[in-house]
Image (cartoon, rainbow, N blue to C red; front, side, top):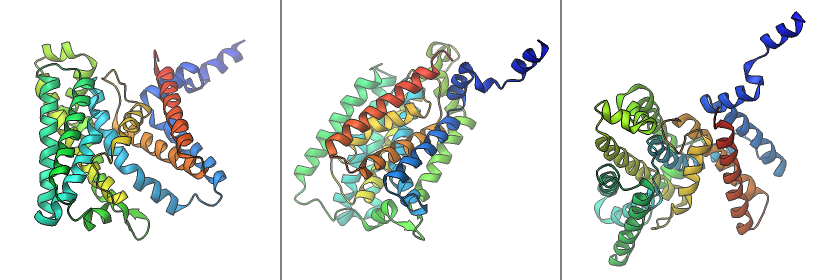
Length: 332
Protein backbone atom coordinates (compact mmCIF):
# COMPACT_ATOMS: atom_id res chain seq x y z
CA UNK A 1 0.00 0.00 0.00
CA UNK A 2 2.78 2.37 0.93
CA UNK A 3 4.52 1.45 -2.34
CA UNK A 4 1.52 2.66 -4.35
CA UNK A 5 1.45 5.90 -2.38
CA UNK A 6 5.17 6.38 -2.90
CA UNK A 7 4.74 5.71 -6.62
CA UNK A 8 2.04 8.37 -6.89
CA UNK A 9 3.99 10.85 -4.81
CA UNK A 10 7.12 10.45 -6.94
CA UNK A 11 5.27 10.67 -10.27
CA UNK A 12 6.34 13.72 -12.25
CA UNK A 13 3.65 16.42 -12.20
CA UNK A 14 4.26 16.93 -15.94
CA UNK A 15 2.90 13.44 -16.66
CA UNK A 16 -0.63 14.43 -15.60
CA UNK A 17 -3.13 16.15 -17.89
CA UNK A 18 -3.21 19.22 -15.67
CA UNK A 19 0.57 19.26 -15.57
CA UNK A 20 0.71 19.24 -19.37
CA UNK A 21 -1.80 22.09 -19.53
CA UNK A 22 0.29 24.12 -17.10
CA UNK A 23 3.39 23.34 -19.19
CA UNK A 24 1.70 24.58 -22.36
CA UNK A 25 0.50 27.71 -20.57
CA UNK A 26 3.60 28.70 -18.60
CA UNK A 27 6.40 27.22 -20.72
CA UNK A 28 5.06 27.09 -24.27
CA UNK A 29 8.50 27.03 -25.87
CA UNK A 30 9.10 23.43 -24.71
CA UNK A 31 6.09 21.79 -26.45
CA UNK A 32 6.48 24.15 -29.41
CA UNK A 33 10.06 22.99 -29.93
CA UNK A 34 8.80 19.41 -29.83
CA UNK A 35 6.17 20.22 -32.47
CA UNK A 36 8.81 21.97 -34.57
CA UNK A 37 10.98 18.88 -34.41
CA UNK A 38 8.06 16.66 -35.38
CA UNK A 39 7.42 18.78 -38.49
CA UNK A 40 10.95 18.16 -39.71
CA UNK A 41 10.23 14.43 -40.15
CA UNK A 42 7.43 14.69 -42.76
CA UNK A 43 9.50 17.35 -44.55
CA UNK A 44 12.29 14.82 -44.92
CA UNK A 45 9.89 12.06 -45.93
CA UNK A 46 8.25 14.26 -48.57
CA UNK A 47 11.59 15.03 -50.19
CA UNK A 48 14.37 12.75 -48.88
CA UNK A 49 17.61 14.58 -48.28
CA UNK A 50 16.04 18.03 -48.17
CA UNK A 51 16.62 18.56 -44.44
CA UNK A 52 20.09 20.08 -44.20
CA UNK A 53 21.87 23.19 -43.04
CA UNK A 54 20.92 24.88 -46.30
CA UNK A 55 17.25 23.95 -45.80
CA UNK A 56 17.30 25.29 -42.24
CA UNK A 57 18.85 28.52 -43.49
CA UNK A 58 16.13 28.94 -46.11
CA UNK A 59 13.41 28.31 -43.52
CA UNK A 60 14.88 30.87 -41.14
CA UNK A 61 15.22 33.43 -43.92
CA UNK A 62 11.58 32.96 -44.90
CA UNK A 63 10.39 33.03 -41.29
CA UNK A 64 12.10 36.29 -40.28
CA UNK A 65 9.60 38.74 -41.87
CA UNK A 66 6.66 36.72 -40.51
CA UNK A 67 8.26 36.64 -37.06
CA UNK A 68 8.61 40.43 -37.07
CA UNK A 69 4.97 40.90 -38.04
CA UNK A 70 4.02 38.33 -35.41
CA UNK A 71 6.01 40.42 -32.93
CA UNK A 72 3.65 43.31 -33.72
CA UNK A 73 0.71 41.04 -32.88
CA UNK A 74 2.37 39.76 -29.70
CA UNK A 75 2.92 43.26 -28.33
CA UNK A 76 -0.59 44.46 -29.16
CA UNK A 77 -2.27 41.24 -28.00
CA UNK A 78 -0.60 41.55 -24.60
CA UNK A 79 -2.82 44.60 -24.07
CA UNK A 80 -5.91 42.77 -25.32
CA UNK A 81 -5.64 44.39 -28.77
CA UNK A 82 -4.60 43.36 -32.26
CA UNK A 83 -3.03 45.05 -35.27
CA UNK A 84 -4.59 44.13 -38.61
CA UNK A 85 -2.90 47.05 -40.37
CA UNK A 86 0.57 45.48 -40.34
CA UNK A 87 0.18 44.00 -43.83
CA UNK A 88 -0.78 47.33 -45.37
CA UNK A 89 1.95 49.21 -43.49
CA UNK A 90 4.61 46.66 -44.48
CA UNK A 91 3.54 46.76 -48.14
CA UNK A 92 3.43 50.55 -48.12
CA UNK A 93 6.91 50.80 -46.62
CA UNK A 94 8.48 48.47 -49.17
CA UNK A 95 6.69 50.24 -52.02
CA UNK A 96 7.70 53.72 -50.82
CA UNK A 97 11.37 52.74 -50.70
CA UNK A 98 11.18 51.28 -54.21
CA UNK A 99 9.63 54.44 -55.62
CA UNK A 100 11.93 56.89 -53.82
CA UNK A 101 15.30 55.14 -53.85
CA UNK A 102 16.12 56.14 -57.44
CA UNK A 103 15.72 59.87 -56.85
CA UNK A 104 16.28 60.35 -53.13
CA UNK A 105 18.70 57.59 -52.22
CA UNK A 106 18.23 54.60 -49.96
CA UNK A 107 18.71 56.37 -46.62
CA UNK A 108 16.14 59.07 -47.37
CA UNK A 109 13.72 56.51 -48.84
CA UNK A 110 13.91 54.34 -45.72
CA UNK A 111 13.54 57.38 -43.45
CA UNK A 112 10.41 58.51 -45.32
CA UNK A 113 8.92 55.00 -45.14
CA UNK A 114 9.63 54.73 -41.41
CA UNK A 115 8.15 58.20 -40.82
CA UNK A 116 5.00 57.26 -42.75
CA UNK A 117 4.71 54.05 -40.74
CA UNK A 118 5.19 55.94 -37.46
CA UNK A 119 2.50 58.44 -38.46
CA UNK A 120 0.14 55.56 -39.19
CA UNK A 121 0.89 54.06 -35.79
CA UNK A 122 0.35 57.44 -34.12
CA UNK A 123 -3.11 57.82 -35.66
CA UNK A 124 -3.97 54.24 -34.74
CA UNK A 125 -2.73 54.69 -31.19
CA UNK A 126 -4.74 57.87 -30.73
CA UNK A 127 -7.84 56.12 -32.04
CA UNK A 128 -7.39 53.15 -29.71
CA UNK A 129 -5.95 54.90 -26.66
CA UNK A 130 -7.71 58.27 -26.65
CA UNK A 131 -10.98 57.72 -28.49
CA UNK A 132 -11.40 54.12 -27.29
CA UNK A 133 -12.07 52.66 -30.75
CA UNK A 134 -11.78 48.87 -30.61
CA UNK A 135 -8.31 47.83 -31.88
CA UNK A 136 -9.75 45.38 -34.41
CA UNK A 137 -11.93 48.08 -36.00
CA UNK A 138 -9.30 50.80 -35.77
CA UNK A 139 -6.45 48.78 -37.27
CA UNK A 140 -8.66 47.28 -39.96
CA UNK A 141 -9.81 50.75 -40.94
CA UNK A 142 -6.28 52.17 -40.88
CA UNK A 143 -5.13 49.28 -43.05
CA UNK A 144 -7.70 50.26 -45.67
CA UNK A 145 -6.68 53.93 -45.39
CA UNK A 146 -3.01 53.06 -45.88
CA UNK A 147 -3.85 50.82 -48.83
CA UNK A 148 -5.90 53.59 -50.42
CA UNK A 149 -3.15 56.18 -49.95
CA UNK A 150 -0.58 53.76 -51.35
CA UNK A 151 -2.76 53.27 -54.42
CA UNK A 152 -3.05 57.06 -54.84
CA UNK A 153 0.73 57.34 -54.57
CA UNK A 154 1.13 54.59 -57.15
CA UNK A 155 -1.19 56.37 -59.60
CA UNK A 156 0.67 59.66 -59.10
CA UNK A 157 4.00 58.07 -60.02
CA UNK A 158 4.78 58.02 -63.70
CA UNK A 159 7.08 55.07 -63.00
CA UNK A 160 7.66 52.94 -59.95
CA UNK A 161 11.24 54.10 -59.50
CA UNK A 162 14.28 51.88 -59.55
CA UNK A 163 12.58 48.84 -58.04
CA UNK A 164 13.84 47.05 -54.95
CA UNK A 165 17.21 48.46 -53.88
CA UNK A 166 20.15 46.06 -54.22
CA UNK A 167 20.96 46.59 -50.54
CA UNK A 168 17.50 45.39 -49.55
CA UNK A 169 17.76 42.41 -51.89
CA UNK A 170 21.02 41.47 -50.22
CA UNK A 171 19.56 41.96 -46.75
CA UNK A 172 16.35 40.09 -47.49
CA UNK A 173 17.51 37.17 -49.64
CA UNK A 174 21.28 36.66 -49.52
CA UNK A 175 23.19 34.59 -46.98
CA UNK A 176 26.57 35.01 -45.36
CA UNK A 177 28.93 32.17 -46.29
CA UNK A 178 25.96 30.56 -48.00
CA UNK A 179 24.36 29.67 -44.64
CA UNK A 180 23.45 32.57 -42.33
CA UNK A 181 20.77 34.90 -43.74
CA UNK A 182 21.79 38.55 -43.78
CA UNK A 183 18.33 39.36 -42.44
CA UNK A 184 19.50 38.07 -39.06
CA UNK A 185 21.75 41.13 -38.81
CA UNK A 186 18.57 43.18 -38.55
CA UNK A 187 16.35 40.62 -36.85
CA UNK A 188 18.60 39.66 -33.92
CA UNK A 189 18.66 43.24 -32.55
CA UNK A 190 14.88 43.38 -32.94
CA UNK A 191 14.54 40.15 -30.94
CA UNK A 192 16.85 41.44 -28.21
CA UNK A 193 14.97 44.72 -27.91
CA UNK A 194 11.55 43.03 -27.71
CA UNK A 195 12.62 40.32 -25.25
CA UNK A 196 14.47 42.72 -22.96
CA UNK A 197 11.72 45.29 -23.29
CA UNK A 198 9.09 42.82 -22.12
CA UNK A 199 11.16 41.27 -19.33
CA UNK A 200 13.44 43.99 -18.01
CA UNK A 201 11.81 47.36 -18.59
CA UNK A 202 8.83 49.08 -17.05
CA UNK A 203 7.11 49.65 -20.38
CA UNK A 204 6.91 45.90 -20.98
CA UNK A 205 5.35 45.39 -17.55
CA UNK A 206 2.80 48.08 -18.37
CA UNK A 207 1.72 46.15 -21.47
CA UNK A 208 1.05 43.08 -19.34
CA UNK A 209 -0.70 45.16 -16.67
CA UNK A 210 -3.06 46.84 -19.14
CA UNK A 211 -3.93 43.51 -20.74
CA UNK A 212 -4.39 41.68 -17.46
CA UNK A 213 -6.46 44.29 -15.61
CA UNK A 214 -6.84 47.71 -17.26
CA UNK A 215 -8.92 49.09 -14.40
CA UNK A 216 -6.30 48.20 -11.80
CA UNK A 217 -3.60 49.60 -14.08
CA UNK A 218 -5.48 52.88 -14.37
CA UNK A 219 -6.08 53.10 -10.61
CA UNK A 220 -2.38 52.55 -10.00
CA UNK A 221 -1.62 55.69 -11.99
CA UNK A 222 -0.81 54.19 -15.39
CA UNK A 223 -1.72 56.45 -18.28
CA UNK A 224 -2.98 53.74 -20.55
CA UNK A 225 -3.54 55.97 -23.57
CA UNK A 226 0.12 56.95 -23.65
CA UNK A 227 1.17 53.31 -23.45
CA UNK A 228 -1.17 52.41 -26.32
CA UNK A 229 -0.08 55.30 -28.54
CA UNK A 230 3.57 54.29 -28.12
CA UNK A 231 2.63 50.64 -28.66
CA UNK A 232 0.99 51.16 -32.04
CA UNK A 233 3.83 53.41 -33.21
CA UNK A 234 6.28 50.63 -32.32
CA UNK A 235 4.08 48.07 -34.07
CA UNK A 236 3.89 50.14 -37.25
CA UNK A 237 7.66 50.74 -37.34
CA UNK A 238 8.29 47.01 -36.88
CA UNK A 239 5.84 46.30 -39.71
CA UNK A 240 7.75 48.71 -41.94
CA UNK A 241 11.01 46.90 -41.15
CA UNK A 242 9.33 43.62 -42.07
CA UNK A 243 8.17 45.25 -45.31
CA UNK A 244 11.77 46.09 -46.24
CA UNK A 245 12.78 42.46 -45.71
CA UNK A 246 9.78 41.07 -47.61
CA UNK A 247 10.49 43.25 -50.63
CA UNK A 248 14.14 42.24 -50.49
CA UNK A 249 13.27 38.56 -50.16
CA UNK A 250 10.79 38.52 -53.04
CA UNK A 251 12.42 41.28 -55.14
CA UNK A 252 8.93 42.73 -55.53
CA UNK A 253 7.48 46.06 -54.41
CA UNK A 254 3.69 46.17 -54.37
CA UNK A 255 0.97 47.90 -52.36
CA UNK A 256 -0.45 44.48 -51.37
CA UNK A 257 2.82 42.56 -50.98
CA UNK A 258 2.43 41.60 -47.30
CA UNK A 259 -1.36 41.27 -47.09
CA UNK A 260 -1.20 37.47 -47.07
CA UNK A 261 0.94 37.50 -43.89
CA UNK A 262 -1.55 39.30 -41.64
CA UNK A 263 -3.52 36.30 -40.43
CA UNK A 264 -0.44 34.01 -40.21
CA UNK A 265 1.17 36.68 -38.02
CA UNK A 266 -1.80 36.52 -35.65
CA UNK A 267 -1.69 32.71 -35.73
CA UNK A 268 2.04 32.65 -34.96
CA UNK A 269 1.47 34.78 -31.86
CA UNK A 270 -1.46 32.63 -30.68
CA UNK A 271 0.40 29.37 -31.34
CA UNK A 272 3.37 30.87 -29.50
CA UNK A 273 1.32 31.20 -26.34
CA UNK A 274 0.10 34.81 -26.41
CA UNK A 275 -3.49 35.17 -25.26
CA UNK A 276 -5.78 37.22 -27.47
CA UNK A 277 -7.48 38.36 -24.26
CA UNK A 278 -4.30 40.05 -23.08
CA UNK A 279 -2.01 39.81 -20.08
CA UNK A 280 -0.26 36.55 -20.96
CA UNK A 281 2.37 35.53 -23.46
CA UNK A 282 5.81 36.43 -24.74
CA UNK A 283 7.86 36.78 -27.87
CA UNK A 284 9.99 33.65 -27.51
CA UNK A 285 7.07 31.36 -28.30
CA UNK A 286 6.02 33.62 -31.17
CA UNK A 287 9.36 33.07 -32.90
CA UNK A 288 8.86 29.30 -32.74
CA UNK A 289 5.28 29.75 -33.95
CA UNK A 290 6.52 31.64 -37.02
CA UNK A 291 9.00 28.85 -37.76
CA UNK A 292 6.26 26.22 -37.40
CA UNK A 293 4.02 28.01 -39.90
CA UNK A 294 6.92 28.54 -42.32
CA UNK A 295 7.91 24.87 -42.26
CA UNK A 296 4.26 23.84 -42.61
CA UNK A 297 3.88 26.04 -45.69
CA UNK A 298 7.10 24.62 -47.15
CA UNK A 299 5.91 21.08 -46.48
CA UNK A 300 2.63 21.65 -48.30
CA UNK A 301 4.56 23.10 -51.24
CA UNK A 302 6.89 20.08 -51.27
CA UNK A 303 3.89 17.78 -51.64
CA UNK A 304 3.17 19.36 -55.03
CA UNK A 305 -0.43 20.22 -54.19
CA UNK A 306 -2.35 22.83 -56.21
CA UNK A 307 -2.27 26.36 -54.80
CA UNK A 308 -5.96 26.30 -53.83
CA UNK A 309 -5.54 23.03 -51.94
CA UNK A 310 -2.44 24.34 -50.17
CA UNK A 311 -4.32 27.41 -49.04
CA UNK A 312 -7.20 25.32 -47.71
CA UNK A 313 -4.88 22.94 -45.84
CA UNK A 314 -2.68 25.73 -44.49
CA UNK A 315 -5.67 27.66 -43.20
CA UNK A 316 -7.16 24.51 -41.67
CA UNK A 317 -3.89 23.67 -39.95
CA UNK A 318 -3.64 27.18 -38.50
CA UNK A 319 -7.19 26.99 -37.15
CA UNK A 320 -6.69 23.49 -35.73
CA UNK A 321 -3.36 24.20 -34.01
CA UNK A 322 -4.52 27.54 -32.59
CA UNK A 323 -7.81 26.06 -31.38
CA UNK A 324 -6.09 23.04 -29.84
CA UNK A 325 -3.56 25.24 -28.08
CA UNK A 326 -6.28 27.53 -26.73
CA UNK A 327 -8.29 24.50 -25.54
CA UNK A 328 -5.33 22.94 -23.78
CA UNK A 329 -4.28 26.12 -21.99
CA UNK A 330 -7.76 27.20 -20.93
CA UNK A 331 -8.50 26.76 -17.24
CA UNK A 332 -5.01 25.34 -16.70
